[in-house]
Length: 168
Image (tube, rainbow, N blue to C red):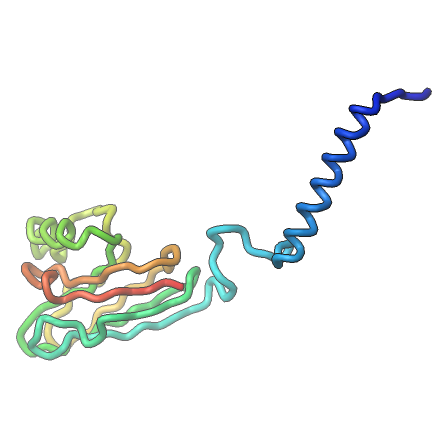
């Protein structure tokens, strides 16, 4: 059985095949292909364990580090050492642009809730309140690449006690 196609159908099909071939060549030339990670996927090394250590800065309302870094997709364990002899602190990782909201909501939440509003969608991870001289730990999966603020939500501390976790 023979099938007849018009010249127009033939050229249309040839154009489509040529376009696909050209697209494939461009993707291959740009490093694309089966081994490339899809857009938004964690970088290589995903799932690796990362330990971050941070503390308060004596009696000042400051963290001893104002920047931290971790790779995308990592499993982060953060150890927070309260180096104060008198002040209680915590470490709270939050979504960008929510510092004032989380800090103010924390005051209303009270000490029984570690000065963190229960089930707050703006809070990514947090330690409990840490008494002077003690250490608190939190384990969490790194969020998507970007810069995330961290603060202390003890009443009034979030204004000065803050930093940025960069996920690469």
